[in-house]
Length: 639
Image (cartoon, rainbow, N blue to C red; front, side, top):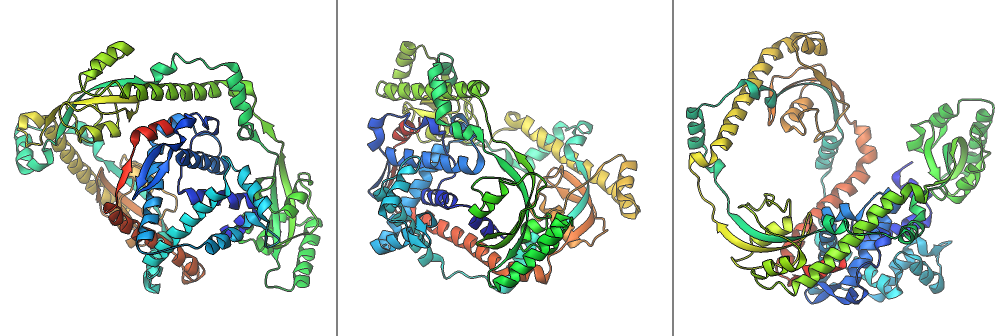
């Protein structure tokens, strides 16, 4: 069964949820019970504007929450706001929304328009809005929109469709000329799908570090030969005050009633519906004489009922090519995951029972249930610690954000930091000098604070900035320009580099000593063990796959796909040492494999190239646009 077949077996709600995902352009989300936690009055705040078109707080929050629901539907509910905040998800979501508006602005600039009729036809084509191939009517259409979480008005939904179509048209006008020649297509298909199984002996440089030292003369020589490697980058020093979310959280008390409400509001995500594990044999009817197909299904059913091995029958007869390889097994499925006719029968069968023939839109199905799992719901008592933790973090986040917003009005110059800190019982600290990509002493990893520090002038003070610990106000104290240091300043860095190089050289020598024995040995693994090293065998792996102890190693990969089965390599230098490999097995794609996959793979490769081309085009287009982001409004909307 192809992926498309599997999706067709799902009911309309899945197709509908995917529409929401496509419309929003976003991947990560926030917990549903946080919906509405920000101030309603701020719903009209402008978070960003692109060529005069605004993105409001309300639009941001709707997108944020809609994506959470789609994400949880696909991957479950184990996603906390705390984790999302630490990952800076709100920034990613806003960037995607800005990118969409920028694409619309560019489309408008080049004269691309979408008519009302095109919007209507796209809506009519969405399966969720069809009943027996016809539009379900305005009343049911609006009802479905209201059922979404959060609800959508027709105008909001239709404007999203219009934007989506506009971007599609722009993308098509820019990228439809791209193509892939058959020879290049086959080469790339083989590159991605050929696989190799290896036995790998690694000589990691770190294991030799204790055996080497660096003399002062060697350190001086290394420094003289590579002075650019040790240049000190531009650095900054700041004073900062932090509103620590964990400190606020320690004072938060969550009433039992609120915990119960959060539980009840999200009961669905804590429930596992009844499931059955089913196997099936599908005889397709598409493009066939139905009577002939049914006769074949009846014959297979007769064999199954007579005691023939169901898995063997599925492997031999089933025309669902994916599950047939697994003896017809579909794994555990819940209600609504398959077409109604399949569900209706599967959930009435007991483990071990085989159904009669079931007619569906795909053909004739024979179903065997092998196991059942009753539906379960995790209790409030069981979830109380988790919910308490989530709600306390949410409230601490909100309180910290509110405090940060109020303090922004009081902190307009560097001297205000000390005055406000004293009034609030907070502390002002001073960092050491740090580079752009270094953590800030006392503040931790804070990309936004570090970035802002390198935009400020001495004496400037920032608005509230997101930091790993909460919200920070920073003031630039000093700047340090980049410079070429004297050896004494970077001696330990240079020493470390000398030791690394010596350890790598020892790893090469050790590998060279053992490689000859490994090449001539009848048993690679035994020879390695006898030499005091271990040969680790991989699974069948494609190019770019990580290799045990080595990670991604292009030099090893190149040798692996070049050598024949059974061959042992010479020592191969890798960034963290040296390796010797034996090619245990190869799985190469055949002309038949490529012929079957050719059309679909061409679509995938073209889509990838078109996406990259369009992305590069839009990077340049955005450089000419007026794009403003209100980070303070974003913080309020996402807190």
